[in-house]
Length: 186
Image (cartoon, rainbow, N blue to C red; front, side):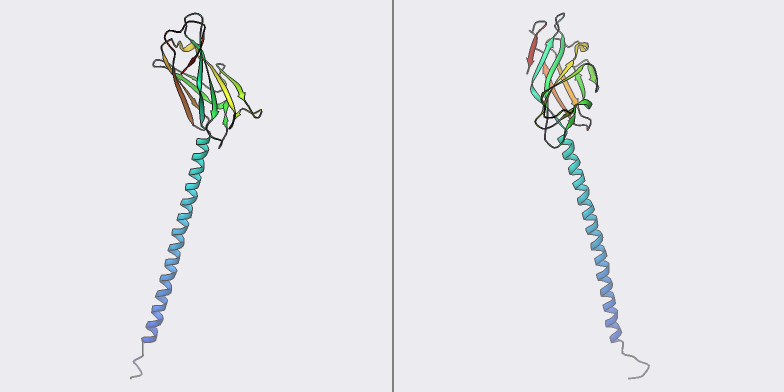
């Protein structure tokens, strides 16, 4: 063996160890990035789920009974009353910010919050605020005489909360009903 020729086997083993350690470091960094992205995605999914549950919790559920009052002049719809409850116990609904819309085939009238045509009467109330919470029932009265809804006509009442949740009910006034009467619509 000549002095100028060296045995390179030891260096080859050392180079292989360095490459192996470098691969482990790169794989560790990649795994950390993947786990970080998975955790971030999981947190975002959790935020979306909580937001959806909160919005669903702010939904309204109208009662089955709808009472209509016909005026004594022409027998047109004067007012309509119906009950509202919170659909779930996840969130309360601010009744002072609900927008009501009454629609027929020809007319659409919106009752914004604070409109004089809206009257709220609490049937079952657990506190003194205007939040509709689980277990509470409020009766909403809408004076709809400006719409000129006639006997035999169908109308839809839409309710939209401040959070964007909606509920609606559709009823028809029977054609053979007289004037100046209260009637339950089904």
